[in-house]
Structures are given as structure tokens and as C-alpha cells.
Image (cartoon, rainbow, N blue to C red):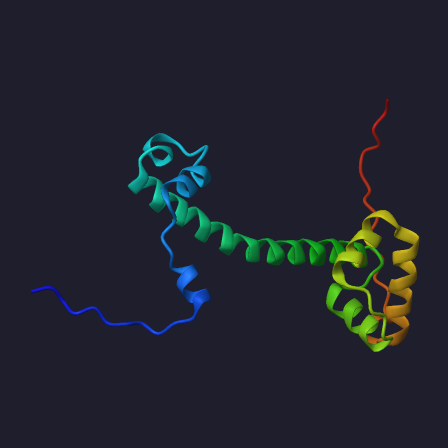
Length: 145
């Protein structure tokens, strides 16, 4: 005997979310896949579903990776002026300088004098930034051309 079907109470939006994609949509999304994943509906449906999961996850990971890259660039720029990243950001926060990490990383790469001015502002605001660490000069063999 077949099981009695229960009526699920859900909104229209939820019903649309769980709708099975038709063949045409699946094959359109599977274009470029290798082997039977592009032309066999069962395999294509599984591969497309997994690909959509990966794209959903990686849209979030991309934001995380970009923020990490900006922080690395800012840290490299601030260390050239003898301040580490944490103290630099703390000093900017105390001075109420509201520049985001993306803009700060662009400044550190393309506008070194403007970035130095920001480092000086941060250094004056936070006592931990007072000591200026001068990187040691590299002495070695001079290359003769």
C-alpha cells in the first residue's frame, strides 16, 4: 500500500526554491561540463546542483579572501614606516578616520605619501605607535654592471 501523502504548508517562495529544474535549464547550466555530465540528464542534474552549491559557497569565500589580501597589503605598507597593522588600525579608529580596508590597501600601493600621512596620524593618536622602528640596512656585495 502506498504511503499517504502529507500536505506540506509552505510559502510560494519555498515551493519555488525546491522546484526541480527542467531538462532545458539543466543542460543550459551544464554547458561546458566534461563527459556525460553535459548530456545525460541524471548526471547533469547532480553536477549542476553541486556546481550551484560551490558557487554559493565561493561567493562568500571571495569576500573573505579579498579582505585578507587588503589586510596583508596594509600591513606591508605600515611596517615600512615602523608600525604594525593592529596598532595602525587602532590609531586610525581613535582619530575617527573612517577609511575602509579596501581604500587603505589602494593607498598603500599607489599613494605612498598619502599613506605615510595616515601612518603619522595613527602614530600620533596611539601611544603604542610612538617608537619608530627603522629597518636595518642591507649591506652586501654591490653589483657591478
